[in-house]
Length: 228
Image (cartoon, rainbow, N blue to C red; front, side, top):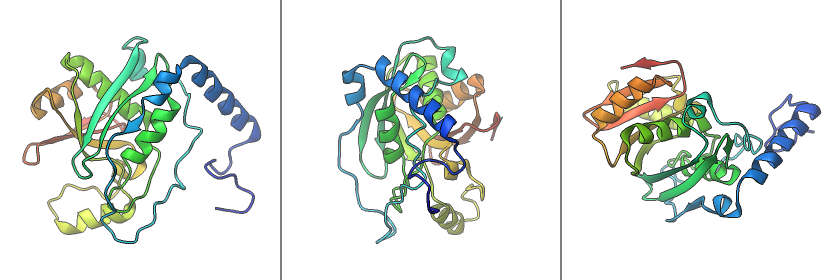
């Protein structure tokens, strides 16, 4: 961090835009009940990082990415509360939360998601693109069933990405993976086979969709629509 920068605020953010986004946060908070704000709670304690001695890095967490309007994906789905449930296959943590209400994201939930979907190997935390949650919500709506998303991978630090690449040439890990930007997630859904989840995602056309039948998961990201 350079001298004079405010922690958590992106370099180059003007005072006017800072104030504007702060007002947006306040507006978002007023539309969320105290119960909604309290629902973001990790149920089980996390495990230690894979790389021993790696400090948690929260420098990339942007607390102003809250209270913002929901994405175009979700605007097509109405204005109800959007609630998701997760199980992390590596840490054993459960998380269930209301991440948005209408067109406003829940700021507490987004902060919890940043932590929950952080790099479990290094302990590093990165802002997660809220539109990933909109995609999961849309897929759950397409399914017509309320279930649990099992998380195989969320944010990956560059160190972890390089490590996974080095394990096998056939790993399918991209050198410029959107996982490193907090814009990708690998999941299963408790109420549908992964083939069906893939088909729903392809029909949605909201981002990248990768299908890994041998490992039984679907990759989703907020990049351009493409499939593999």
